[in-house]
Image 1: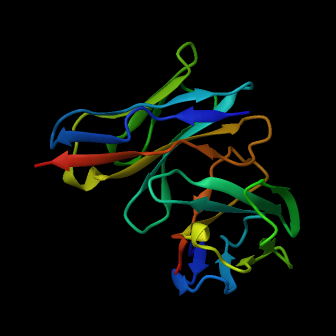
Image 2: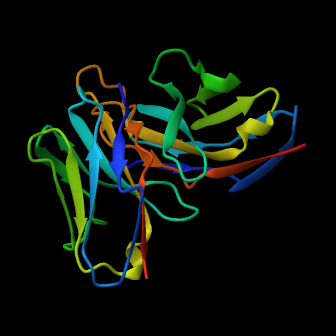
Length: 114
Length: 115
């Protein structure tokens, strides 16, 4: 069984500051890992994904994440926050073997302060 | 490519009524998923189809819930005898089987409010 833990349901940063959203996963098989963003009353948009290639993954809007197998982590970062980054962020894992359903974390609400 | 389309976007109903949601996936995608998202939580898997076959159902999908994908294109999710606990956002997603790296493409969701 797979699971995802997102530490911190709410994160606030100042505009221009570093964004760090934490994600730890549990999987008995090699995982695929994803970060999605959700704006109010909208669906989920893929930010980036790890599928066993490079461990440092770059995504859209300046976000990146690093897969660390020893720490079972896949934290999301952005060097400089923008007001438009305010949204909810979800980490998700799937079984690389079958690549079927995704299991999501409970999300982190990012607030960007002016 | 118009993306995944869901309707209605919002539905308000009284407890005990039946509701049906429709999802039109990206046209060449043969996998279709339904997820439920409650306030402050991440999406939870309900069921998925490969073409017209329903391959997996979550234990969250009670007997009051039924999903179909009759021709392997659009899908419907029906909830019978709605309860207040059914209030949630119902998300549809689609993907390809061949070359699938697990990425799902989501629609904007159908929000259900049961009074």
